[in-house]
Length: 143
Image (cartoon, rainbow, N blue to C red; front, side, top):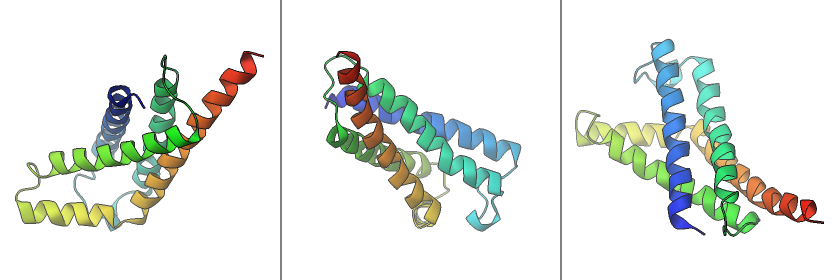
């Protein structure tokens, strides 16, 4: 695994997903609303956005020169994307939540939602799929 390239793909996925979520929250005036009060469109965007960006940036990652390919590498990239997202969430929520206790409450509230776990599994699955298919596409085009 090209760790720098994988980390960049993870960062790009996180930042693009965050930008779309912020725009959606602004459009629907959601702010930091209770997750039970969020507009259904924001839930859909919140789940599909990271999956689409994981597809885009994992494709970018695997198209790099000398990058190991395959489902196992996709699994590693997907796990790295989730870990990177978690770390960046903590880094961005802690200073903006209005106190440590409030930050912990917000993070626990987010990470116990079903949508997070569905999204995490689908992001990893997307990376596995892309990692396996890039290899397969490259070998079939060289024949």
